[in-house]
Length: 430
Image 1: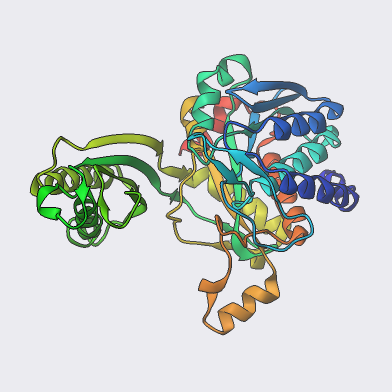
Image 2: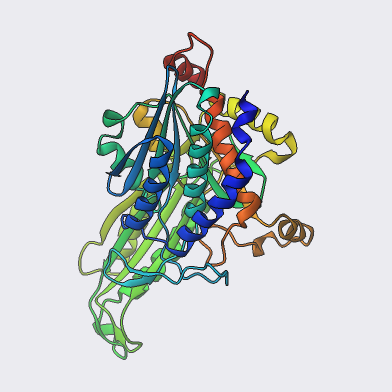
């Protein structure tokens, strides 16, 4: 009977292609996703969902009740990045917006969140049109501000699981630089914890020709950047994995003026609480130590302003979903992949609901282009997430993403009579 779920997939995806291109052309920065939220809410309402907007800022929640059974949450994010698009596509973004710091920036869906949101609309549409094949409650969550690791927490703090049904399972996915049509999965820790710190180093400015009369914060900053690279190489055990990146270094206004301050933006990625603490402390020690060695005029300022938890795809629940994927797509399209050093805040939902989370990846790159890059040993040239050249091919990326979310949902919906939501939780926690 569940084969009927896919009857309208082809015409649905043809229509969804227009939605995807519209979202791609009109990206919005984190916390500013007003047009996108309105568009997504408009897609859900005709399907019979109870739709609520402005949850945790610009979040959108849809609830579809269909008798007794588990509550299954399907989640997608929909914010964009301050990146200037260089894909050359006819629907490429030319949007610009004002960032949180007041500066005008270009805006692009460089991480594929437009594809995520479109696929969730598609899965919500398929499942709403096939209510005779499942029972339970669908909780469809469109999350803002994932790129700032703020959106999931904001929705939870705004009463997501007080105002709406508490899920028994949380399901999500991310498009990436895999061949289109292929699903990649991991079990256990699959995406790193992420922490960012904004640093200001204080010196004493003056003329570039008389450095002896100054305290140079640029030199301090340069030493910090170099010294930080020794943390992973010399302090993190070889069996552990960590990344420390300085993504921002700003100082001065002119080549012959030594400034008063220098600023750095530092990001760390880790896969265990112990390593997270070790690296966090080492970063602070290096910064303070270099400030002291450089005779800083005052203590450095450190603002740990962005944090995303380690993402764990529950092993037992993941195994159930992967089995369903293999049966639906065929084993050749479902492949294990190693942990990813990027980060996601979707795990906040599962932790808040005390429910298992299952998260997977699927490909958005042209399969022939990917195969050629592998053959030539040049996969580094393939555009990945956050690249100004990253834009998934519409098909088969779109249909695969729609099917994956729907299959994932059906894995938990429509359990035999007598199976309760609590039993689903227990199955996922074993």
